[in-house]
Length: 264
Ligand SMILES: C[S@@+](CC[C@H](N)C(=O)[O-])C[C@H]1O[C@@H](n2cnc3c(N)ncnc32)[C@H](O)[C@@H]1O
Image (cartoon, rainbow, N blue to C red; front, side, top):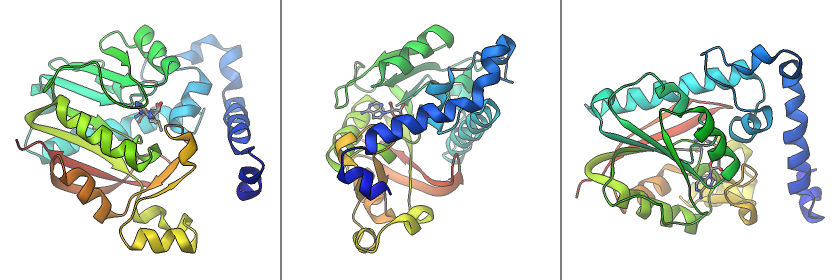
């Protein structure tokens, strides 16, 4: 089915329709305005924005994903021997509609900054998550930030949607904005997703190559990247020292979470 839609150029409109269809799960919010607040007491992004970052319009699932993601960031920072609250500046690259950022609303200490290339998502964050600041960036670097501005850069479910040239450019740019001694945390889809690959894709994956589907819509969730661990080691290793990789259940399956340090 997906192959047939792709052949006639309908994959993208079909995906858009699927995203809109998912918003039906949030119809009660139209009738009951109180439901526009999450169970965490913060404003809920509109259903379509939730679908675009989390694949679900179900409010409780969105909030549950938010807790899992933030716990993962905290756990990894602790593993590196750092205290999250003691960090000075934290950057969420590809912040979406603040699924992770909203968890820092009551954390005092670090300055929180997010950016995304989707202006609608950034506009929602600016209006609704005033404890942090947000910028729109382009599909390609640069970021509107100074060299060595952040002690922690994290990027959840973003490199999972980028082509190989963009991944290389963004790793170099994220290094530029990370302090020496600072940390980067990013997630990829690896072995837990390899069953989805065709036999040809699987052969490339097993050789250690990145596999990217729908590269022409890079940056959207339709573009799907599959990262073998060897590829991640090479990608991150050009700019950072990889410290730890673990598989964690974040949203619709396990993602590999990688933590690395800028050593120079
Ligand atoms: C699956 S969502 C994840 C959002 C957020 N990181 C989270 O965990 O909730 C992927 C996000 O990556 C963003 N994105 C994709 N390409 C980007 C780029 N080149 N620069 C910044 N953001 C990008 C998308 O707009 C989208 O918000």
